[in-house]
Length: 114
Image 1 (tube, helix red, strand yellow):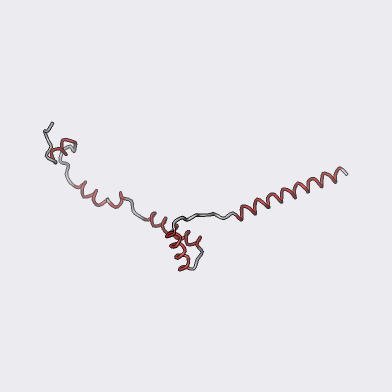
Image 2: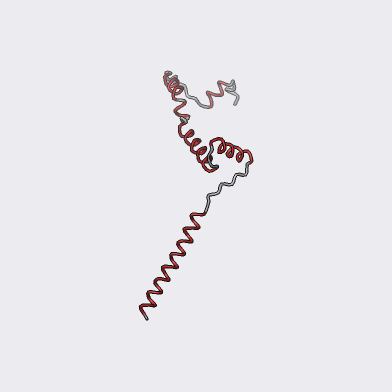
């Protein structure tokens, strides 16, 4: 009798564990990721993109976000875009002048007003 109780308790425990895991797995697999769009124009654009491409709204959002991230990644930085200007400026010989407040005051005609 004692072995039967142990076996029964063990089976019951495993069964309860299975049910709990099944419920958890079912709940986790049924949870949808929700993106709430409060802007009517955005909603219309996403739905139109999905309709024209013949894909789901989720896929339309995924493709649009992926494309935008790729575009941003491929953009060159300000440093890269200004390389030519920096090269031309660095080609000039140094003048020996310091660029300070006095220099800018002289440019604007405000020198010696103290």
